[in-house]
Amino acid sequence: MEKTYLKECKLKDGSVVLLRPLVAEDREGLITFFQSLPEELRLYLRHDVTDANIIKSWTENIDYDHIFPILAFAGERIVGDVSLHRIPFGWKRHIGTVRVAVDPDYHDKGLGTLLIHEIVELASEFGLEKLWAELPLEMPAAIAVFRKAGFSSKAVVEGLVKDLHGRNTDVVIMVCDIGTQYDF
Ligand SMILES: CC(C)(COP(=O)(O)OP(=O)(O)OC[C@H]1O[C@@H](n2cnc3c(N)ncnc32)[C@H](O)[C@@H]1OP(=O)(O)O)[C@@H](O)C(=O)NCCC(=O)NCCS
Image 1 (cartoon, rainbow, N blue to C red):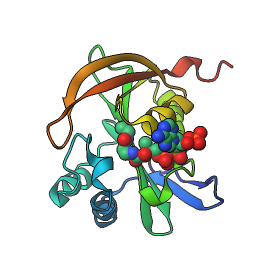
Image 2: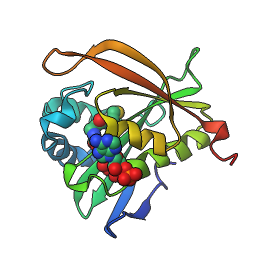
Image 3: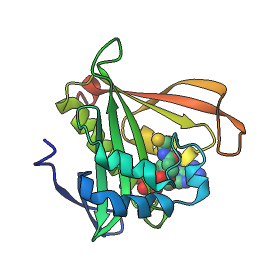
Image 4: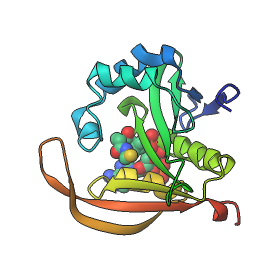
């Protein structure tokens, strides 16, 4: 699928982005993308994405069965990144986890929603039954985007995680039932 997946999409403002899976040659572009994200968008990420070695390890160890990353390009520039994370064995083998980030210059143009929709479609092709996302309660835009893409809030865990500065914050667990996505 990774060889054939290539999509051109129009955003709300009429600009065009190209979506395709991450390949090893994207290393420098991905480093630039993550290093240019302002701190407020990096407060709750799971990795220090400003560390070029972390991005290098991602681009050197691509395993689409484990992590399926899709990049959005505006020309040569990476403006969005969404990834589907799967555990191939065990009680969560039917569940995929979604993570997404969009360049602030491209916020509120529908790109975040588009990228999550792509993952919802892929999840169905991969035979997954549910998608899972963990979002900080204090990021209403992120929660709104996942809701628009078919996710609903299932729980709030108070003070579960720490931001970059060590402050505890509440996390919303959101789930999308893949089987029911196309029933209406
Ligand atoms: C979450 C994120 C991906 C959204 O990207 P985006 O391209 O701006 O998303 P969209 O344009 O599709 O949608 C944004 C929506 O949020 C809404 N929104 C923006 N600020 C908001 C706020 N303060 N409260 C509620 N909704 C808000 C917008 O109105 C828009 O909805 P609309 O299209 O119905 O008007 C982006 O903010 C980001 O990269 N955040 C940092 C990473 C992150 O938090 N990821 C989620 C955890 S995995």
